[in-house]
Length: 221
Image (tube, rainbow, N blue to C red):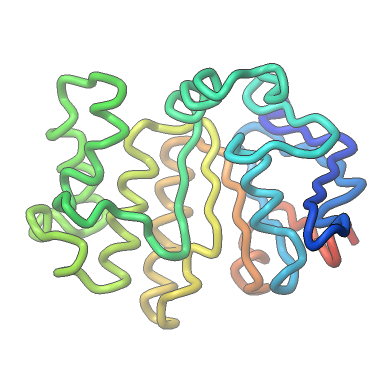
């Protein structure tokens, strides 16, 4: 297998009240194309910061990230945005749906950015696969948390991403709803052949992936 994501000597620091705060240091790992992976650790360990850097949403203080064959430090903000639109999917703990758009319109957003003429038909098909075709014209405020996350799941897979980053995707859901979302997540992931990178503090969820990386205090342990 080839590497879809390679992280080398990664370090991230912030300046706070005149002091240097080190959030991540000495992070090295690679993930294989098509693999399922979890990054696990306690709150405040640097998991979400690491995910943002790997996805090109944030830049490290030093070190290299190579994503889908692209060295992120060499890319401009516009080039990073184009790479994310082409190759990356996201699922967030708080869903991040656009409140002024219906379920189907939310799923259509990545497709319309790519000027896909079949955006609505593809979005409806994905909503059907996550069991929400009958809720397609509802707005996020009219949907339960589990339904919103299923819409987010459909949106994440709409552009058939090479790699999917999921940040605590079940963090705001009850146990039964979480199980349904996880089944859909892994099912769609197998179907599309996407590399999955899952950030979670849930050891049971992490155990369902092929590889688990643990972070504590900004370091791999």
